[in-house]
Length: 426
Image (tube, rainbow, N blue to C red; front, side, top):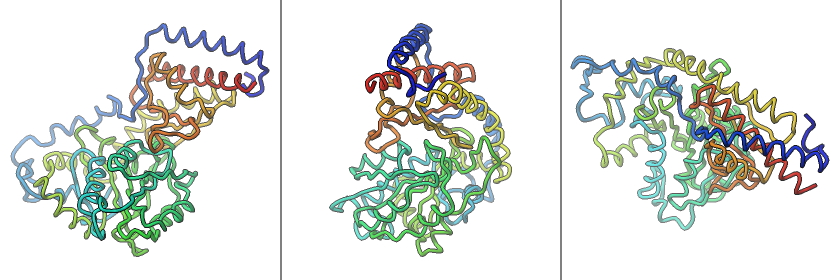
């Protein structure tokens, strides 16, 4: 088909009427489709059901002399700390194992900084005259919600193919009011970008004016390739330590997309001094996290190599879903020259850039046709995409058949809003 920007006004009007009729037909099917969140599908959840029977006796609940049914070990079972250290390529004494949510560990860290200050803080963040946080965008909406909930000003940082624009980052950290940066370094949410070694080095080597500046290193997809062999990822903690920034980085990970999102385990990794400082504060709110669940995961996942075998099974379920999305976009949208998109090798999202000024309108049409997606603008601080262009596609939950229907609706709505926009300019 002729690219839309090359069409005459008359051709655009004719095509708009045709696409509008197709959308009306889709709406009449009364579909209820959801591509709003990056959740594992039922097939993926089924991969970990054997874990439910790993602890069946009193003896099963003893781990290196520790009865996991009782109080204690705030920082986590030694075997769970060792497992996460193996997965992340760090040391067990750098690891703090929490409950099911790494997001909660992130929130708790920011809350602790706000109310009490961090190990190197001169005073709690709440006493600062101004607080700012660097937010690579598009990024993870829940990172932004945490920051906004504490009234911290968010500074958008453009993403490049290598990660955040480090020239901007290095300039901003000279401002003492800038106290941190969010990073999703491997298969970033939503673009699927893998930070380059040079970007990682420059982040690890930052010299911020704020002595308690934090790098929030959300390594959510560290083992989540679906279209490539597993690639080891640099250990940010050891690199930062080599630059004298031992206490600057806090790394987060979880088994949310490895086993069960609602019943997994999570970790925070940082310098042993940071772990000791935070443990004193966290020990006020809990005597320990769920060690029974920690042990279940240790027994089920075993080690890094065994976990990678499980992740290959996840990949076999995910890849066909992403292939459906890429195939539809390449055949239905690519020739029309009205959008572009990223094609990641891992993670949970496809990041699409529609014609500027059309993302909100596109997703409103999708919703009207029975397709729910992440709100336009959610991938930017304050929910404000300055170009009104980015659309996050989450293909993991729907079945292949549902996904084919969903992506067909999205393509129709992308076409219609592009035609509207071009006709305004014609």
